[in-house]
Image (cartoon, rainbow, N blue to C red):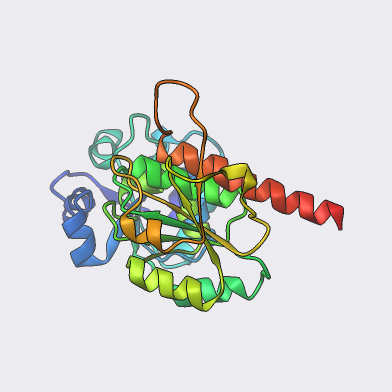
Length: 279
């Protein structure tokens, strides 16, 4: 590992360790324009997607595989400063129960509707996810992971309750935060953008008037999901093309928002695959 030129940090009082700890707070992330990425898969996808790493902290004693050296080398070649810590210091900055010895501080990404516009050039039938006021980081990360798996064009986070740079969003998305166009906008901006591009708006709600499998996802679609506790706002209930529901046959009246998003996204993927086969 010596040829990787990692600088040894021996004290928890080191300013860079203090900075890593401070970035667990949203205010610090907002003020500094920096955020945390921890874990091999997450960092690999971040580097492959061109995310700019500022610092990379490594602890070889915690490595789980044999590919870490290549990732560290690539990070260094891309401009990241590499620091090596003891296991005790690494455990201090890690937010995982079982850290794998890789922890980075990165610059936040400059993404907006222009990012989605670029992605739209490669598809004639976009599938957009709109996540309104999702409260729990784990749910937002899972929505990103499902959107990636189902082949969605991108994700718009509206009127955010959860910061997309929350460490638990990064973790639960397993790095798909970096591979998908993920932007933040108000509901009004999002509605105007969708209307301008003639993209139908499908509101997912327990009060929908049709079962989700009867919606036509073969056309350009934006599926809107709401907060866990209150569901979609009145704005999206009024300004949608169709309201769809997932039938509930037990005592619970709705599914977790991350589970609901997965079901609807894969129904859209199924319909689109069937459409291609029939051609």
